[in-house]
Length: 428
Image (tube, rainbow, N blue to C red; front, side, top):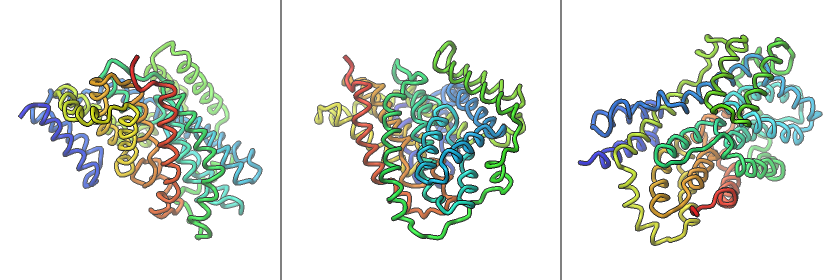
């Protein structure tokens, strides 16, 4: 049996584990890397190269900055300003919250942004009859996901996609490669929430009794009361501004910018090693590293060529880059609702890139479409950790599908429209 076929069998085994969820996804991905080595698909250095990959270091550093934002109260301070600006209007609060959460998520971990806003939502709903937890919590998570998909460091899926893209082609995403189509889709999402989502949500959960969020009372109180060190908040804001300016200016690499920002957070006391060790989302970091290892194994084994040979007749019969693009985007969007979005990307993207190479399609356009689709999947709590975090608001499983199904259709159409506008599907 050739290494390419063995690699595909290992990948198929991992997909089964991802879908059935019999073991945690992070463990399934690590097992996949181990099997790649045991069955001589690739060397140990290749299979576990993801753990030293700059993209994993970038994610690690970004999570440290997010932890510092939360520890210093900077994120909570921003949330309090959103509360004051809304003047007790749920619609205004929802609008401003989605905009702020979307922008913050472009540069901070989505989970950190949600963690900062959840106690604010809980506290506001306790004292205002106009605010309802279910009307606010799911849009918060969705805003962080849509905003996070606008930059390279916003969330894990694009980091995973970028590593696969780089290993299987001569292209890679820059910090703001995703920005153009991403912002357009973010705007559409905010309009959806304002004019469709709010009314739809009230019809779905109606007057169902509100659920008390399982949030530490001290954290909830601190979210609306100024109990933080103002000096550290100022320092944190300066660090974030410098980080964003460096991202935009691109004077040094994106990874180096994130690492320097993380080091400054530690040196200035905005966070500390104990807090990082305790609050770090280790599952995300390890899963990303293992996924990159699986991708490298597939690439080294020649599995990409086998996929291309198998898919070529199908693509030739279609003879339309747009239709091929639509199919792959739909696959990514659908699969991501049942397994983690990064896992969906390592299933779909290695299929798409050999097709692009064989037929002269633009790998960047197809990579972005697949990445957006995976990042925006939200019709089940299984789609992403950000969606799972909203369960504290008392949603039923069916609420997610009923609330987001129209949004999924709109998002799918938006991807098909906006990505080709910014990135042609066929190379010149």
